[in-house]
Amino acid sequence: MIVFDGRGILLDVEGTTSSISFVYDVLFVHAKRHVGDFLAARCGDPDVRAAAMGLATTAGLPAETVDSAEGVSRLAMVALDLMSRDVKDTALKALQGMIWRGGYESGEIRAHVFDDVPPALAQWADSGLDVRIYSSGSIEAQRLFFAHTAHGDLTRHLRGHYDTTTGPKREEASYAAIAADMGLEPRQILFVSDVGAELDAAKTAGMATALAVRPGNRDPGGVFQHEAVASFAEVVT
Image (cartoon, rainbow, N blue to C red; front, side, top):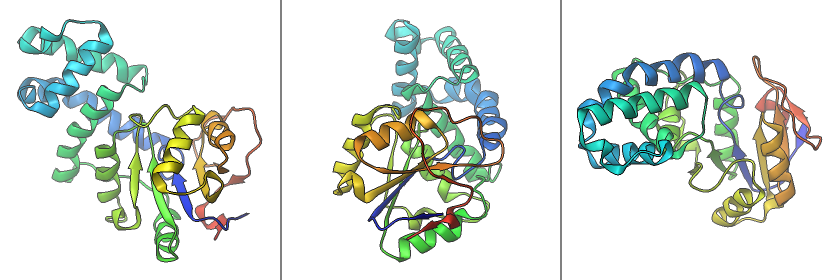
């Protein structure tokens, strides 16, 4: 059990609010299945084109790759390769978020969250805590995720979202930037994640930390010791 008397809670998603298996077995599978057709049909849209150009940059391809059907097909293969290697590429994450939007809106996808998450989010928000998300998934993907969970729309409990545009999740500076954006001292924020290196970075920045222990999670690794919680109900505010 963790007794936290601060003012903000920052949450990871995969392995923390939600199962790792949902991300890999549902979300990634959906994105892989649709990425080729999505790029072919939508690459003229400004946001999709920007993501496609980002993929081209990642792969070392010329910008004009996005202007031909053959090039777009090649970019789809780049996206598939990055997903297979679980590369945290910002352009890929933006593209995935746009693909997932269709799945959420059609009802094909319902986001998984652990049963203890909705009541904890509600309790924390109702008590005045500033609850936010920090994930490698794009901000759009995060908002869609929490708006379309199996427990309903949870976005009303969240005041903000951060992704890799803020900075890498394993770097101290990212957490300092988040604390500044929240208008809080780092020590007033509790960061919960299943990844030791992320928790180490947050702790170094001055945040309180908690290690999420969820079914299917991997060895967290990391350097520092972080108090473990198997449920958000173990965080007492």
